[in-house]
Image (cartoon, rainbow, N blue to C red; front, side, top):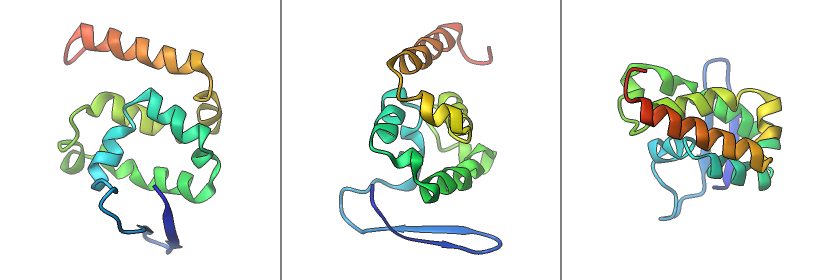
Length: 117
């Protein structure tokens, strides 16, 4: 994902991406944040060091609200990881295979516990 421009105002953050058929709709990008491997990929490609991208992740926190979260297939891990991405330490730690493995293990454990646990 390449961002061609970033503009800030007092009320909104707007990011426009170059337009190609390869860019998924926004909810698909947000949903992809549920994957520890994708988070590791973002970190390895230095996206998580880019202040504009980090600001965009902060902006995406509106997905935590029901009018938006209802569109997520995996709201639990997606929103948890979105919250973790707000922390600089996590954005560094996700480069570690141990951190990726821990997130996978937590996800499997949570899925085995079932909904509402």
